[in-house]
Image (cartoon, rainbow over the protein chains, first blue to last red):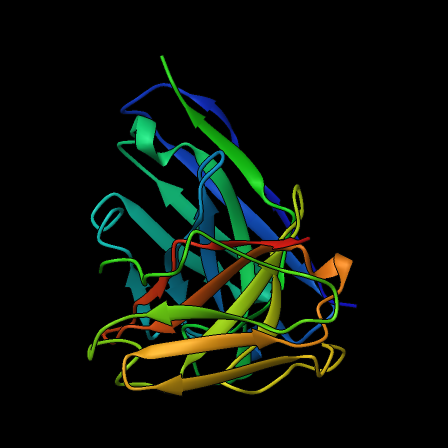
Amino acid sequence: EVQLVESGGGLVQPGRSLRLSCAASGFTFDDYAMHWVRQAPGKGLEWVSGISWNSGSIGYADSVKGRFTISRDNAKNSLYLQMNSLRAEDTALYYCAKDGTVTTVSWADFDYWGQGTLVTVSS
Amino acid sequence: QSALTQPASVSGSPGQSITISCTGTSSDVGSYNLVSWYQQHPGKAPKLMIYEVSKRPSGVSNRFSGSKSGNTASLTISGLQAEDEADYYCCSYAGSSHAVFGGGTQLTVL
C-alpha cells in the first residue's frame, strides 16, 4: 500500500524558514517523480514544486521560485521542501504527491497524496 | 502561470450527467495531452479521477470520463450519484517543468 506521510509543518514568523519532509513507502521511491502541492485555507489547489526520480529535472511555481528548494533522498525514501523567506500567503496545507508515470515526469498526474502538513505564517 | 479557468459551481440531479470545463491556453492545455482531474471531498486529500486527458485509474468508476478540444478540457460525470458531490480540480502540464491547476468547481447533487 502506497503511503505518503508529511511532517515539519507549524507556526512560523514571516521571513523565517521551515523544512517539510515526506516519508514514502509501499512503492519503489526512486522510480518516480514527486511533487509538493499546497492548499490555502478555503482555497483551491496550487502546484508548488516537482522533482524527477534522479533530481535531474526540477520545477517551481513562480510564487515560490527563489525561496523554496525541493530535494529528495532516495536512500531514505524521502522528499523535502526547504522553505525560506516565508510570507503570510504561504500559509497552507502542504501535500506530498507521487507522480503517476514511472521513470519520467508527467508533471500533472498525481496518483497518490499524503494527508498534508499545515504551515501557518504569522507574527 | 495563470490558473486554468473552471466554473465555480455546477449542479445536477441524481442520474443526470454534468460536464465541468477547464479552459487554459495554447501553452498548457492546448499543447499537451497531460491534463488530469481530481476529486476532493471536504477535509480529505484529492483523488486522481482522470489522467492524460481521458484515462481512468484503476478503481475509478467508468461514470467519469475526460476529453479535450483545443485549449479546453472537460470532465463528464454520468449517472450522477450523491457521493459525487465534491470539489473538482483540473491540472495541466504547462511546459518548462511546471504544472498548473484550475481554480476548482464545486459540484452539488440536488
